[in-house]
Length: 229
Image 1 (tube, rainbow, N blue to C red):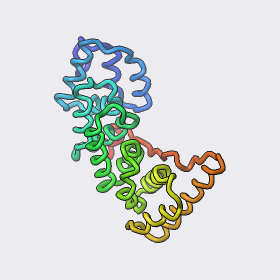
Image 2 (image 1 turned 135 degrees about the horizontal axis):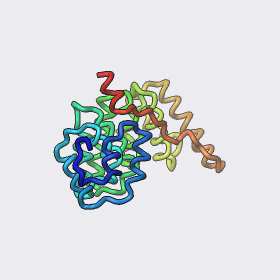
Image 3 (image 1 turned 30 degrees about the horizontal axis):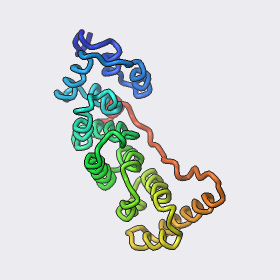
Image 4 (image 1 turned 90 degrees about the vertical axis):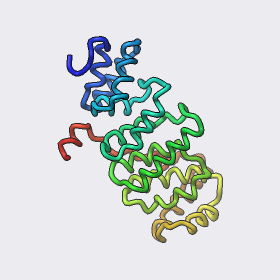
């Protein structure tokens, strides 16, 4: 029966022990109902925080986490700097969850995601640049321009596409002026302005602009990460 007590449902046990992320999605779909014992098990896993696979699986799928500890659990993952897989799981798990939190909680999450962009690269930064988009408002635009110089191409593309959408009600001159006041190199400024101009043209012509869609980076399984360590 593994590390989990007999009181937990078989569906939850499978979910908590699943190693492959594609299989995890299927395992999550099979968990249709959480009874009292299942909820106790989830609370125990997150309270002890000593089973990496189970913890990360819950962070990837936070809808299973009881509402009263959902924010604190995801925040704990966002603050993790030793086991970076928990950080990655929280970043990914937060995608599409912005409506679940208060304004204060959303702001806290936003600041943690921006911090990830500032101090990391690789899949962590790439995925943070996807998740943060739905926690930002147009008022954050000026502080996001600097990420157009990020080392990760996915970050540059995702932040630029967000900026274009967030500022599409302005004109090209205003967009260019905001870029001018940023730390973005001249060549990247020119590229960004051209993409903004093309977006405005397509919008006015009633055409779809797929360049504003986010770019997703591959997420490794936990065992893949542990093998590299």
